[in-house]
Image 1 (cartoon, rainbow, N blue to C red):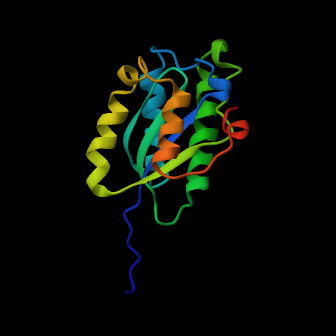
Image 2 (cartoon, rainbow, N blue to C red; image 1 turned 180 degrees about the vertical axis):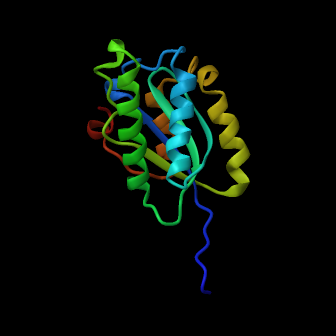
Length: 150
């Protein structure tokens, strides 16, 4: 096969540093659009972007020429630099160092899109930490509590 083809859908989750509530409602739509633009420019189009005041979820189609860690570095560096230009209130903004990423089959895309769209409602009942623990259990990912929260 002379051509390289791929469809790798990834659900990415990361928070603000120490889960500080930086993402105010007035900046959230712009931030989500900016995150989507970074993904698009990295040939990894965002299919859904959402979250709350302390974390974001992205569903994107990973470019076949880019590693997941390279994409996350572009997303976090670019969006952190951008948000700091939004005013003095954001001068100390930082994302957490790590991230979580989960592979999604095409058949699960609709459910993940819905899940991301309903983040605010979901987090009225479930904390970010409990949400992430549930994902880690669902995907069988071993972790150490001492190192996943920063």
